[in-house]
Structure formats: structure tokens, C-alpha cells
Length: 169
Image 1 (cartoon, rainbow, N blue to C red):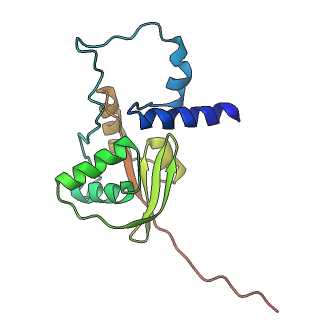
Image 2: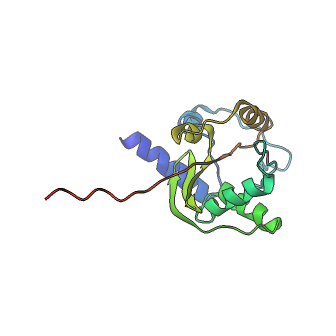
Image 3: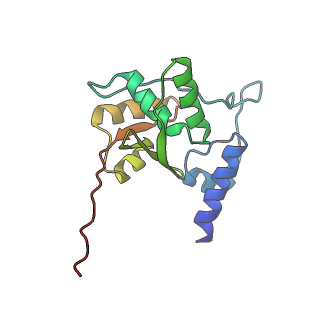
């Protein structure tokens, strides 16, 4: 129990300082690092993530996908969530208020947007919410990861509600 808690705290504290940890496994094995190679300035990145690509499923406009993701990310404090919001702002997209926001450590976020559950996060989160990425989008994500980017999926689902039957008296 202590190890998972320590990892969650470590990833969260790192994010507060602008350090993004790609996976718990990377954090767990970091103690074995002997050499770190930096460019001549000593900078790995600018520390300011930005959305570099938006690839949508057939029939979905990229702007609609970005609008949906940004609507969820309005309540997020994660640097990648902030990048999504900046891109939506740069494109002058109007956002829909979200509710029931849940941050899922190391996976992504979920929220209700216009009465639909929306998940924004990695492939594992998409599997958890029952929306595995189709092959073409999974291939695009692999391509992004190979060039050092962090792929992020956006899935919409449908929820329902009903009044429970009254107990028999």
C-alpha cells in the first residue's frame, strides 16, 4: 500500500514542479540511471507542453474533439490539460461547462459534458471506460510516442438515469 501511495505523491509533486513522469515504471527505475545526456544548453524541453497534433475519428471535426477535451480539462491542474486549454483558447473555441470531474492518477481525467461522460487520457483509461482506441488512432498515437510526444485519447460515452422503483410497503 505504501509504494503505490508514494508513487502517486511523487508523480503529483513532480507535476507541480513542471516535471512530467511518463509512467510509474519510469519513476520506479529512475534510481538505476547512471548517465543523463542533455543538449548544449542543458535543457531537455521548455517545460511548457503544447498540443502538436489533433487527429479525429472519421466524421468528427478536429475542432469538436479539441472543444470536448478542453471542456473536460477546465478543472484539471495537469500541465497537459493546461496545454489543451491553451490550444482551444488559441482557436477561439467555446467550451461547454463540465461537472463530476475525476482525475485518475497516471491515466487521465473524466467528466460529464453536456450530459455525456467524456474521458481524456491514455489508452489504458480508454480501456477502463470501455472505449478502446480504434486501430487507426492507436497507430497515430504510436507514431506520436515514437517522436517523443505524449498521446492522449478523447472518448465520449452515454450515460442514463432513471427513477428507482418505490419499495413495496
